[in-house]
Amino acid sequence: MEGLDEFGKRHGFDDWREPKGGEALFIWRFALGGQELPGYNALRIDTVEHPDLPRKIESLWRAGKEDADRVLLRVDASEASSVTKARAELLRLLAQFQSPEIERIGDGPGDIAFGGAGYRALVFARANIVVLLLNAGDEIQSVEPPARELDRLLREGPGADRSSVRPTIQRAEVESASGGRQVRLVLEAEDPLGRHVWFRLSAPGGEFVAQEDGVVFRPEGEGRQAIEVTAVNENLGVAVEQIDFTI
Image (cartoon, rainbow, N blue to C red):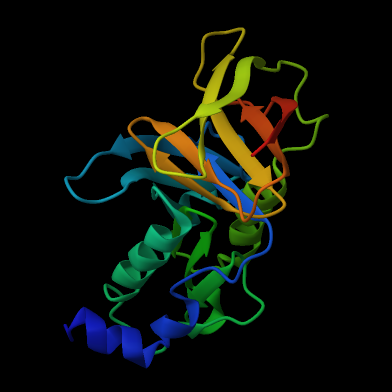
């Protein structure tokens, strides 16, 4: 395999290494619960920890139709500690593709996306999440529709009417953090059935970074700030609160 630096040059990594500003989006403690891809049934969802690599979810899905055993979809999702580190993880995954046909998709899902001919395989980064989709069955189909569905979930969050069983946000606050103009977020939420809850955070600008089992927010400038906090449970029930503060 060619060196990662050379591979980065071939795919123009310097052009997309850093985010270009605009809305700040961050996903924290992401999880798949099996409800994320309409038309597919989750067969397996595992969380894998690797030293020096982002936490990764590995999953296998079956299409919900008559010949479903022939249509299998692999979906892996990695959660990086920042958007910049997610871009580096995307490059690392790109280097593992054997096909020379992998190229950037200008209108693809995510902030940055790469795929092969006919969308047989696709990898994209949305905020700090990197998602890989591959055909895993005998019948090869385009992975573009489930990729765009999952990207929409990350980008917009689930609809308020997706589920009537919703989590409760117990704390959504900011506290001062060392290191200059930044704040640490205090986030706590509970699911009524005791299931896992993940968070989607957004702000008009600035940067979110995961640090020491928490999240730090670095605004673009001083003044009034607003962060939207969305808590999501396994059946995609949501609770939303806004944190307003001044720096």
